Image (cartoon, rainbow, N blue to C red; front, side, top):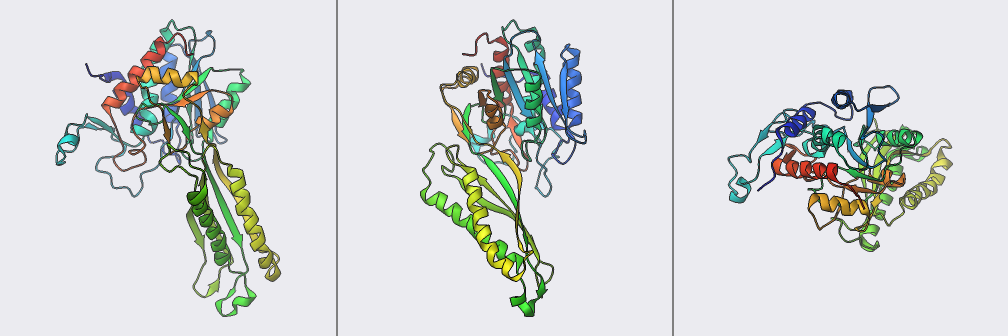
Length: 402
């Protein structure tokens, strides 16, 4: 008999999707909803805020007094949808079948889907955990379950660092962590790191007829952009492969470039942003040092014309890579709960590397596919939600995570 998502869990998922928690906005509506719901079950929540108290993390222990157990983790923020061609309201949380004008007979048999921003990434996982919170509270399992819901994952995994710091301050020592990012309910044991940088270039402006008296910031920036591209090609050409990733080598790319004020003015300023997505087996700090060293050599000639000229680098975000194994107890637990003999690697970044870096064995396993995340008409199938609910209900009955 096929699994069916409970009406309560689906209602919670729709409620959370209808909340606008794009990273540029506050997530307090969702955090307050979770805290109030858990409060009705007698569960106290720890709230850690960002600097201006517009966003917050929530950490709650279900099974107070039991030995520390498993963290059920998710991020509350979503990416925006500006400029995307949606056929439904991104906050509608509508449930509907595959569009009727699709000619693919196989696709036409697809299960109903929940549409909306965050439906796959990753409010549905949080919603199903909340909808089943009472099971964790009343469970006779010998260990507690912790809910950990963070802010600003999508823009750099900023909130979870505060959450973990608070957890350590309270001497809470979880045995393991399950992060419900969309993996189609197949436990994921590795992902690349995501490191983003801003490079600001200061040159010396002049009329474009007097270029020898100037330092063209755009042209100097372009040289470093070319270095980043050379590195990307070198990774593809010669870096040892890590099979299992969609792209089995590290990547580098430039995402933004700004500079110049007029065609006949040698630009004084330019700025670009770039990223590395490094394999768990590669050294991203070495990559960044290679870029800054190249910029330093370029800067020598710039300063001969204008001593104030040069490069300045800023770190935008650091999301460490994640690497676990099939043999980890939490991986085997996730496989049992998901009914999966497989594990997978994922291309996208998560908070897993941060949890593992804090000494907490971690696995990534949640409903939906990253292929739908961040896209117009983002969706998660109700079948995936039902599998997720069975997974979490199984966790509530688990007596041993080894």
